[in-house]
Length: 313
Image 1 (tube, rainbow, N blue to C red):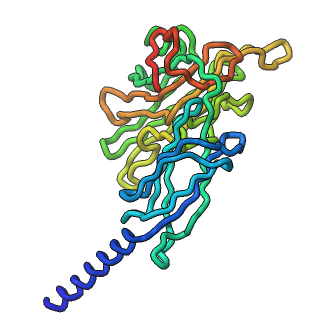
Image 2 (image 1 turned 60 degrees about the vertical axis):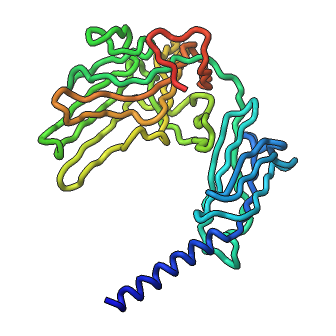
Image 3 (image 1 turned 45 degrees about the vertical axis):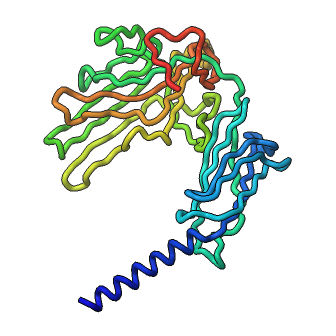
């Protein structure tokens, strides 16, 4: 018993010594701030600091650089926020991964590049957070993006922009699966997952919808079973985003003449798959109602809010 207590004291002392060493360590990092074109953002205001330790305020130099050097805290991490008129707010962090050497966090003075995005041309968009009961299973039901509702007779929608079909198998709360399919009513309509993400900016997706690459069939699967456990997306999936094109018009040569564009922020989800009363579909979308305008830079303060739409910032 005494031996075990002795080794426990040794272990505690080592942990405390390690924490004290980290807490007393110095760290240095150079933050390089650039815009989307790769141009250094000079004299850009920076608020930064080591976690629970020394803080810094100032501006970048003519090369867009801001140097932080000082006493670090017990957690080897530095955080920063960047905000200036004409730019979207950004924040980021860096974690020192290597062991402390000679009282200094490692690596010493890494150059970390972060991108700030300009406010270019924000416009009013239809914006809506959707959580709707799927009215019927195993049949195709239209969803009208302009009215924000299921197509008649299940809602007030007039046109089927998304055609939704849901099926499920439910044995118990721990053994179920569901499949949601979205298809489109016009030949060149479709959806495409976005892979260009500006994760540090509050405006995290591209400004413009892509011209090509839209797929006419999108499937979401979710479930749970005793063997494999849960499968499918978790939470809102804020790292996910999509663009869509609807209401396409084709000219006499079969080429795209006109269309309406939008984006989905986060994951398209189904909740309550095993629920007796039936599941809901959940997603948040932004729609530019102007035909052929691919701009999706959202102005959260539109002069004329869209009918039946809830502004989302």
